Length: 207
Ligand SMILES: Nc1ncnc2c1ncn2[C@@H]1O[C@H](COP(=O)(O)OP(=O)(O)O)[C@@H](O)[C@H]1O
Ligand SMILES: [Mg+2]
Image (tube, rainbow, N blue to C red):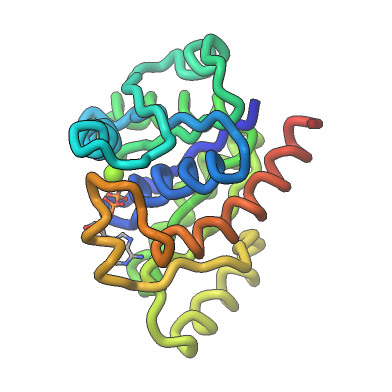
């Protein structure tokens, strides 16, 4: 089983979108994919429920579990690819759940927008991964100008962060995909990201 946690202490960086789209990409690649929503706000759960109500071809099962025992919970699942969506970390309780989600994972994907404030705050997520000895990879999301992306890739690489080659462009179609099966143009960058992520996660799990 590949367990990948999507985390960033900051909200609104594309965690939920990435968890759902990476899981859908995993399902397309032949995995039995599941999203575990550990965010009490429950956006991933809601996405899954809306898609189910609409009979959308979302090949991902979404469940909710927010607690400090995510490693044990995940072990009880029978999926071959589990994406854990996490919430922003505001309270001590949030941080406890985040740590549990990171401990449950073989790899952590940290979505990051190419902006100064995102760059400034990403270190906190990378530090928690390091504390728990989990490999973290940065997924650039909502990318626009290539020059800006270069400005962001360089300092991240200098800081020792592993940045995925795949990046997710800023698109209105991503915003519209909430509650639906992601359409091909939304999924395309996530297919490339899943290829990188699954290869790295397989190495970490020794599969
Ligand atoms: N690649 C993208 N292009 C445009 N909008 C995006 C993209 N990724 C995410 N968004 C939008 O940004 C907002 C926050 O995304 P979300 O996945 O909910 O972040 P988080 O889970 O980190 O809070 C949502 O409105 C979402 O539709
Ligand atoms: Mg979210």
